[in-house]
Image (cartoon, rainbow, N blue to C red):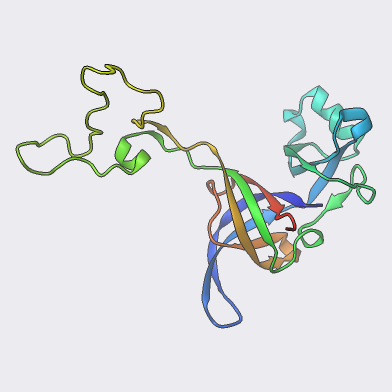
Length: 210
C-alpha cells in the first residue's frame, strides 16, 4: 500500500534525537479495511478501495450495506481509492494498520479539506495591504480599491481578486516527514501542520520514489 486514511487529532511537540523541539500533528491513521479491489479487466484501472471510521448501522443505506457486506467489513464513513500497480498481497476485508505502511523517516503528502472561513474581504482572503490611513480618507482602509480600467476596457476582468467565500477547499501539503509512530493507538506524528480542523478526515500518501 502507498497510503492510508486518517483523522486529525491535534498538534503537539516532541524532542528529536538532538534535543530540538519539533512541532508536529497527531493523526489517527487506520485501521483501514479493504472494501473493494478494482482490476484493469473489470474496471479499466487498478486500485484498492479503503474504508475508515465505522458508521452506525441505522445510518447506512441499503446499497451501501450490500457493498460493504460483499467485502465482509463494517460500513465506513470515509471511503477512498488508492492506485496500486500490483495487489496480489491485498484481499477484500483485510485490515491494514499504520505500522504496516509507514515507518519513521518516511516523507508523505497529506490531502484534506481546509477550514471554512465564510465570506471574507480582500485583506484576509488575498492578503491585500489596504489603503492609506491618512490624506483625507477614513473608511477605505480594508477596501480593494479600483477594480476597473477607466473608459477602456470598461469592464472587470474574470478572475479579479475580490471578496468572497474563503476556505472549505481540498488542499494538499507535500513533503511532510514522519517523526513518530504510536502503533498501539494507531497514531502517526507528522512534522508541521496539515489542512483542516480537528476530527477532519485526511488522506496520507507516501511520496513516490524518484
